[in-house]
Amino acid sequence: MYKYDNYDQAMVDARVAEFRDQITRRIAGDMTEDQFKPLRLMNGLYLQLHAYMLRVAIPYGTLDSRQMRMLAHIARKYDRDYGHFTTRQNIQYNWIKLEDCADILEELATVEMHAIQTSGNCIRNISSDQYAGAAADEVTDPRPWAELLRQWSTFHPEFSYLPRKFKIAVIAASEDRAAMRLHDIGLELIRQDGALGARVFVGGGMGRTPMIAPEINPFVKADDLLSYLEACLRVYNRYGRRDNMYKARIKILIHEIGADEYRRQVAAEFAHVKTLGIDPPLAELERITAFFAAPAYDAPDVEPDRNDPDFAVWLDQNVKPHKQAGYAIVNISLKPIGGIPGDATSQQIDVMADLAEKYSFDELRVTHAQNIVLPYVAKRDLYAVWQALRDAELADANLDLISDIIACPGLDYCSLANARSIPVAQKIATRFADMDRQRDLGELKLKISGCINACGHHHAGHIGILGVDKKGVENYQLTFGGSGAEDVSIGKIIGPGFDEDGVVDAVEKATEVYKALRQGDERFLDTYRRVGLAPFKEAIYG
Amino acid sequence: MKLLTGNDLGSGAVTWWTGNGWSIHVEDAADVGEHGEATLLAEEGARRVNAPYIIDALPTEDGPRPAHIKDRIRALGPTVRTDLTLKPADPAAGDWII
Ligand code: HEM
Ligand code: SF4
Image (tube, chains in turn yellow, green):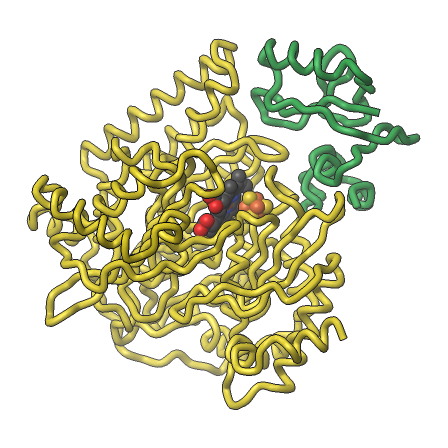
């Protein structure tokens, strides 16, 4: 893992001291909320329904056991004993007091963590593949590149006041586990004739105007990547709309001028930027890459004993192949049936930290599906890991099944919400509590947002649910056919909305139609794409 | 009736204007009638409260009931964690919201 150098640490420490002073002045009444709000947002502190909410950055979703324990400690000492892992691979605390905030950030800084660029119109936390460094199908480890982008984008003076927020994802595998093309910039690292480079996609996003990022460049050489991204951002910074918040994202700019014109402008800007020498020297890249060297693998290539049937089910569902023989990738589901998607108690966070330290070369990942990954577990240790997870109620074997629901905080916590998301997730998971039934339905990605901002990725759900406000009453729209994976697509609204129980019934009916019509090993999404909406609509609205 | 509400500066907790101060209990909220705006400006100016706004509510036997579900959730707490609401011992408290 990357370790801060003196510059990194000094910057983060200085930021904590600065914010402490700002908080003191706000509490003393020397600043109005209008003056203070942009300052607190730059430090990840939002005001939500019941309290302040602090969003802590987890760069590209990677953290070690010391950092994970700190997250548990913060939850225990300053919040209400739990945290919420988000679709942006971060963690949010829902019950933070203003007067505690500087102390929290100071404690986080001792383990190289912060809340910088988790809000505001800047380049946000870089997201990546949660299996980075471990995936059997990657061409290279994307983390050094994600780290390079983190360093480039942190406090980038030119890009601190963009027209709107900016989200970048980096992957290096053909399977897209990071919803790459639904980001403002999506990078897929590839090799061409042996040379490393990236396919660059720009202008994707969800929110009220969902768009799939078009490919702007099929191959940018690794040596040119930062300059190229700088050019992409500059064109956006210059021409992105600042007059209308709803049209300010880069997706709108590219949609309006067209991908060809944007590509032309970026090429022209790139020719200039390349003369500025901002691409890092090879030595710097090597320095960063060295932090991500493969761990000291030493386990024999043994298959785990599948005698315990519950363990075998979990193995099949939650454990994924590793690039190193003898090792596996373990997914820890934060989606217990009837629980709150993405929430973990301090105690559970500590358990996961302990397991990482003991069994996963001290590393954990947060996934955009609001789960946790132990990326380097020896197969001989899988049973012990599973037993410890089971004891902590963390062994739900439902990865990618219908109960592995992404849900935003919705109206239970979020001040922008139109409707609650979590109770809908709970009702659906409970309706499908029978695990045999879930496994029979196979991969089915269900995603729920409490408003059109789409924090719960509903546009990318095989089944998506969007909460709307119908004259003060919660109402839910259903969308089918979305995907955030390499077969990326945006779901379509199927018809009039439902109340809370109605939407659960409609989801169930949709799964019945799927079961009746599926061919071979088609997933729900495949069947829907083949047969279209009509049979589903008839069953649901009939 | 009309209520004035906001979030406490220090704790961020939801607060309700009682007529001469702020309370975290909606039961204590006073009908601000037509004077809400003036109180809002004065209190915001005194920097004791964040993001204050005026809402509609219905008077009931148990006290004011905000007209919109969002403000009822604000008044009680998250419906999915009764243990974290203002009435953790009352499992039926959530019924008041819906
Ligand atoms: C509770 C505080 C939150 C607030 C105030 C908030 C606000 C917003 C807003 C306004 C947008 C739309 C931005 C735009 O289209 O320009 C957005 C998008 C998004 N948020 Fe949140 N959000 C919150 C929590 C979360 C959480 C908990 C998650 C993860 C579970 C999340 C993940 C996202 C994602 C993935 C998007 C879509 C990005 C895109 O537009 O492509 N947010 N959020
Ligand atoms: S989608 Fe809407 S309701 Fe859900 S967290 Fe985002 S802003 Fe809040």
